[in-house]
Image 1 (tube, rainbow, N blue to C red):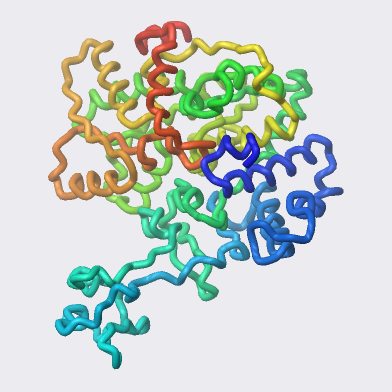
Image 2 (cartoon, rainbow, N blue to C red; image 1 turned 90 degrees about the vertical axis):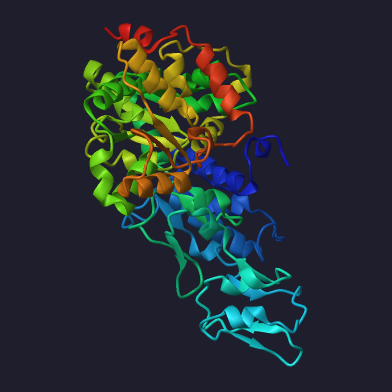
Length: 477
C-alpha cells in the first residue's frame, strides 16, 4: 500500500480518488475529450487483474467511475448512483440455514414459521423455501444453536432509511423517494459499486474562468470537519494548498455556523419546539419520512448557506465552492434557498484528488491562518456541537430559556426522536439531528473516519481567538 492510499480508510475510496485525479489532470490541460478513453488502461495496466475477474472487467468499472467523475447520469436527480457492472459479488441475502444446524428433534424453527417456508430434509436439517420466506426472522429467534442467519448486503445494512433494494439483475437499486443522499451505502460497499457524482469539472472550469481573480474572485468555503482530515499535514498547509489551486480566498463555514447559531437561537426563543436545519440529510429525511413534522424544522439556513450569503452580499460576482465531508451537501446546493449562494461543492476525497491532479505537495507549503469563526462555530463538526452553540447563544443573549435538547447521533436515533415527537412523547424542545454517527466528522465524503476526530475538532475550536459567538460576529460589522 503506497503512502497516498494510506490517507484513505479503504481501498475502494482510493480507487475512486485515482479516477477523479486523472479526470481532473486532463481537464486542467484541456485534454479530457482527447484522452478520456486512455484512463481505464492507465489505471489498470498490464494483463493480470488485481481487483476483478479480468483486466477487461476492471477497466469497464473504471470507465463507469470516469462517467461519475464527469457528473454521472444527468437524468438521475440523485447524487448517489449505482454502477451495476461493479455490483456483482454480493450474495442475494435473506435468512439461510448454516452448518450449525444440528437436525434437532424440537424443530422450533419450523413451528415458528407462519408461512410454511421451513421444511425438514431427510437428515433432519432445516431447509428454507425462499419463495415462501417473508424474512420475518421468527425462525432465527427460536433456534437454540443460532443456526439461521440473516445475510444482508452491506449497502442495505448501511442504509437506515430502507432506500436500497435489488433489481431484476440482483444489482443494488436506490429508491430516490426514500434516499437522503447521506452516502452510507457508498462508504460501506466493499466493491465500490455505489458512488456519488462529482462536480470536479465544474469546479475546475470556475477556477480557470477566474483567470487569477481578473474576472471574479473564487472562494473555498471549508467545513469545520476539515480539522480532522489531511492528518499528514497541518491545516494551515491545506489552506495554502487551496490558494495554490487558484482560490483567491479561503473562508470558514464555521463562521457561517456562528451566524446560523445566532439566528437559530432567536428562532428557538420564538417557538416552543424546533429541530435543527444544519444537516441536509436529516432535513431531507424529515421531508420524506415525516412530512407531517416539517413545520418544526428550523427556517434558518445551514452554515454553508449562511457563509454563502455573507460572501455574496459583499461580492455579488464571487464564485463559492463548498468543501466538506458530506455527500448530501451536493444535493443541498440544488435547493432554491441555497443555489444563489453556493456555486458548487466537493468532498474532502475530491479535494485530495484535486491537489494531486496539480502535483501540489502540501507538506512543503508554509501555513496560512484562519481566524474568523468562534470555538462554538468550529465544534459544529461533531455531534453535540450545535446544541452547545445554541446554549451559548442563549447565554450571550441574556435569555433564561432552557434548552432541553435531544441529541440524535445517526439517522436511527433521529427516527426514534421523530416518532416520539409525532406521538407527543418526546421529552425536549430541540432536536439536533445528525444523519452520520459522530456528526460531520463521520461524513461519507471524508478521507478517513479517525477515532480521534472529535478531539481534533475540539482542539481546532480552542485555537480560535474568538471565544464567544458575539466575538466572531462583531468582526463582521
